[in-house]
Length: 471
Ligand code: GDP
Image (cartoon, rainbow, N blue to C red; front, side):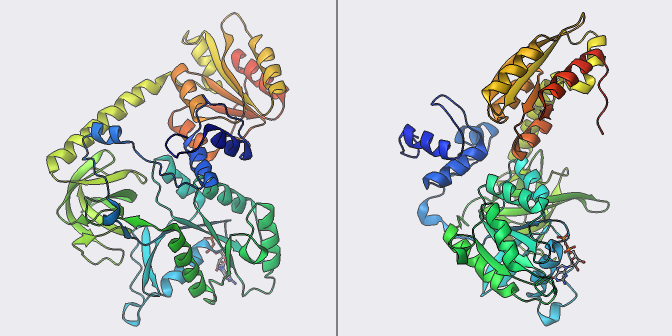
């Protein structure tokens, strides 16, 4: 509240509107902060804080307003399987192929650049919200706008709804492309109606969601879609400072038998230059060769440019942050620091436990208490579950409830579970995707239940070594 110059009651009211009954001492997770920001009309940038940057040995660099230039938007295409995400990306790329290049742009580096009205748009080549969230789980915030593809003859489907939630959780605006308009069964009105049910109200019906009918097959509407993307990007006022050391995210990386580690970097800020030293995740190196998405060698890559580079010592992971640094020595040191930090984290994680492993750990004498965190939709069920579970014990192990709360599973629950070797029981609440991936990374098991008896039964069976394995 202090930082955004709002009163605490304004913040708490806004949280209430989002269905979160928070008090003044409560922590809220990153996704919620971003959504809260948009609710309050402030743009919140999630990223590393200054201390972390300095601690890592990276140079602290603050962009001055006058150095910021507008940059092209970066787009991820999402939607239900078979609704035409891949076809749409292909069709978009085709609009940009000049006659001399035709047939020649099969190069795949993880992102492609197209031009509409002379302005650049960057498309990430791996469609789908899974890739989007996997990147985000590693801290990469690389999408400015999500294009949600919905087939006109099939309308909103489960993965459409998932994609909407993922984009919303990330605070990324959505543009809807109603695809397959060429098909006889196309019913765009139905799509619009179905979208309304998921809180996407399109512009022509008084909402703020841009919606474009397209056909990846005939090419109809593609130009309009690109124009709408540029329009939305203008509203977002995307800016970057080309005159600083480059930073951004690893989009893809692999080991090439002859060329060694090959990585696609998406420059988000600054300008990357061939010959520079970079640190990407826990790998480092001097850029030996740099090519753009067409495979042409380039010397410089400004904001919102994807480049493939050679010269890293190891293969980084998609979603890793990269930074250009002045000296190779610095890059190596930072990479080494990150590695030892990661090793420590992995060591610290070994305390984790799952219900499936519980019995063998009990037998090995490793576990005498089963620590549980209980979260649920209402106080009544949390209370009932707590009381019943607390009573469970046998000669070898007893249940210990270390935390309970009303509401969904939060980051702090996961951290608590991680440090105390606990399992999280989620009753009638669905952990967000960000939390689920955090839990996976931290090796924390979240078990979700809809029936109180099932929760009690499974914990009891696990204690006796009689839990049916889940597949
Ligand atoms: P994805 O799973 O979302 O990537 O979907 P694809 O791009 O693989 O498309 C699934 C199927 O729909 C393929 O058989 C495409 O040829 C077809 N398809 C995609 N777009 C269109 C379109 O605009 N019109 C028609 N008639 N078929 C399409």
